[in-house]
Amino acid sequence: SAVISQKPSRDICQRGTSLTIQCQVDSQVTMMFWYRQQPGQSLTLIATANQGSEATYESGFVIDKFPISRPNLTFSTLTVSNMSPEDSSIYLCSVSGTGLLNTEAFFGQGTRLTVV
Amino acid sequence: QKEVEQDPGPLSVPEGAIVSLNCTYSNSAFQYFMWYRQYSRKGPELLMYTYSSGNKEDGRFTAQVDKSSKYISLFIRDSQPSDSATYLCAMSFGAQKLVFGQGTRLTINP
Figure 1: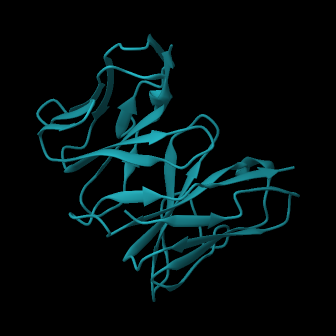
Figure 2: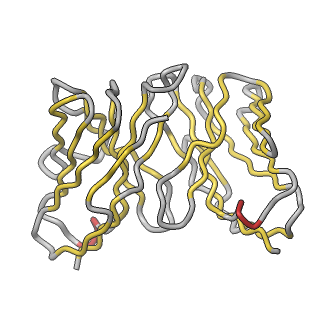
């Protein structure tokens, strides 16, 4: 399995500001994913981050609001822009491509974001 | 209708009981089925992973997939207080993008 480090682990931010979340993996991985987990809810995929190309966003998520970088095979960032209280959530980085069948997914500890 | 349905619970059982957690899904194209365990304030941890139909056992945990019924289960035998967590089912088409159930919050009472 991969070891995934996410920073920051938590933050409290003012509305209208932006926060960049970092995800570092201890091995090279093909695909990295960003999920959102709202209070009491399951995980919703925001986007897939591929190295060397633009991220692919899921329905309901746009690049202007959640810009993503993937500069190499071990690192990615997600920015939550122009935040509002509705963005309060846990944001999780996930990687796959490390398992035997190349489909297992592993998660970081998450970033708990509160927007006030 | 959600692609993956999971009873959110909460579910509370005494220590030593057998726990059964279930998910149903609507898309017959799903091929990979997973169960994740998530402790409070932690990221999800992969618990079981199954490809297509059948059973898989790992210690006290057994995962079952019935593709004909679009139904998957996770059984926990001899449940322990340390098993108290939220259990999430997840599935994919093989493109590595996961679709999650809502998660079932489980408490094992000593």
